[in-house]
Structure formats: structure tokens, C-alpha cells
Length: 285
Figure (cartoon, rainbow, N blue to C red):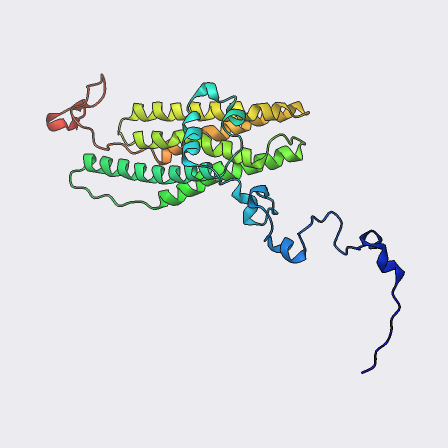
């Protein structure tokens, strides 16, 4: 075996100060995070990761809108019934906005409309004709799904897009959908109470729901419209009011319009009209 004598390099005797290390990592890379660990997140602290840090096409982006407990959702629901809290609802109770509460509010409203209207129709059929059988009309369920989701989800999205087009960017799409969804909470107890087959009571309940939800929406939407540079943007509140009135009237006609067909008891005689005969039958005067 041959040995080769190598002369000592004086530069190695300069000590650690003479050594220089060169990094091949990208700039602004923290120590201890390489390509293999950064991509997989092995060395990341979960507490330091921001919510919704991914793009809008990932589930992490929408997780922040469903991170809410039941107590907060219930508080946000019944607060919509207090007119004095409407003007400060977004800043006081809807910070940050969520999508969990509005989604379940609208979904619960759909089933409440269908079940209450079906129950009211069965009661009316039973009181109208003894022994009459009532067949559930599942078309009411499909109509409830279409009307509620179109008004509670599609309309705020269209309004947000219109405001963005007009240059009004003070309202996020999450806030728009949250405000609209929570505003429909009042219709849930009203739909249950409208099972009572009293026409005047149903009209009063529908009027109360229309007023409370309309005041809540107007108090949260009009300040956004008033912030636009074009004064004509404020006229959108009239269009929204007409749509809201159409929703209330649609609920009343389609779901709260079941009454007893046959009259119970004798009629009150009217001058020049038909007179009640024996047994409650009417005879011409």
C-alpha cells in the first residue's frame, strides 16, 4: 500500500472564523424548515396557523365560517327579534360572521313551513268533513326549498355582487348571507303558531314576522347602500322591500292559507241575502 504525503493547508488552521457556509435554501426560510417539512407541516405549530389560510377552493378556507358553538348561534337568532339591537347587530353580535347558523336557520324554516302547513291542512280537512283523509302534498316541500334558499342564499349573493360592481366594498359576502339567514329566524315560530286555524290570527302573525324581519334587514342594509357614492344606490332598499313583502305574501298564501271549508254553526242573517234554514242550510230570501 502506498502512502502519499499531503502538506497541511494553512487555511485550515485559521479556526472556525475562517470557515464560511453557504446556504442553498430560498430566502426568508426559517431555520429547521426545509422542503420536506414545510410542505407537510410537520414542524409547524398548530396554534400559530391562521384559520382559513388556504385558498377559497380548499376546505380550510370555509372552516372559519363554521367554527361557532350552539350558544352563540342561538343568541344570534333570538337577538334578531329585538328591534333595538338591529342597528348594531353586525358589529356587536355578528363579529365574526358565520355560515353555520344561517344555513340551519333556513333549513329549519323549510321543514317548519312544510310540517306546519301539512298539519294545518289536515286539521282543516278533518273539521270540514268528518272522516276525511288528507294526503300530504310534497310539492309544498319542494316549493319551500326553492323559495327559502333562493331568498336566503341567492338574493344576498346577487346583492353583494351588485354592490361590488357599484364600488361598495364595505360588506363581505359572508356578512350578507349571515344577515339574511338570521333574519328569517322569526318565520320559524310564526309558522308553528299559524297551525291555529284562525284567519285574523294568521294575518297578525305574518304581519309581525314581516315587520320584524323587514326592520332587521333594513337596519343592516341601508347603511351599506347609503355609503355608496351614487345616491341612486339607496333606491335598492325599495326593491328589497318589495321582494320581502312578496316573500311574506307567498308564505301566507302557500303555507298559511288552510281554513275550515264548511261553516260551523248557524250563519248570521244579512238583509237581502240568503237566510239560514233548518239545520244550518241556506234558503233564498
